[in-house]
Amino acid sequence: NAGVMQNPRHLVRRRGQEARLRCSPMKGHSHVYWYRQLPEEGLKFMVYLQKENIIDESGMPKERFSAEFPKEGPSILRIQQVVRGDSAAYFCASSHRDRVIYGYTFGSGTRLTVV
Amino acid sequence: DQQVKQNSPSLSVQEGRISILNCDYTNSMFDYFLWYKKYPAEGPTFLISISSIKDKNEDGRFTVFLNKSAKHLSLHIVPSQPGDSAVYFCAASSNNNDMRFGAGTRLTVKP
Image (tube, rainbow over all chains, first blue to last red; front, side):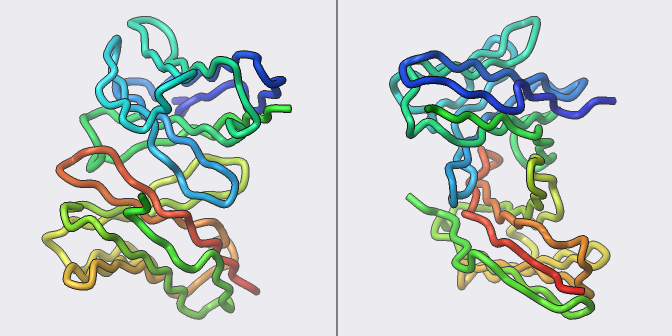
């Protein structure tokens, strides 16, 4: 019973390239959340998705960032034209019910480094 | 805006003693609070939670206290063990919406 799977674990991109981060939720979980942790900071909410729907993207930067959770396959967080300030750890979490009180399960994160 | 604050970036305690981690929040609409524990190179794992209708919740060595009037919560770990050494995040939610996290406190328990 695998937990939340994120890949890659580490990703290095040059400025201007695209970064794609993947998240497979726990079996039976249909709610996915993306968080970003900048160095020396806490986890910042980015986006909440259900299958084929973006429920809350209030934490997503307006430009260059997008997320999807298709009917089949993992959730994808896509960052276009990356800049150095995008370097961070990106965590995905999933839950089997709506929102927080039933607990989120986090993946191990993808560490993005922009050089 | 930093709605959830953990003002102590680090805490060091001796094994067997009590660890007290503090968290303050500004949003009076928060009605559910959680603590997560994070080891290096791993994702956060849920530790304990408390609803705003309570002022205390206990689970083994871990107890969370909530003071709504002061908008303050704390996590007590007693007795502390070296395996408790990790970063602890406080999180809060309002009306079952997405969690807001603090910056974390790094706890070191010395043998």
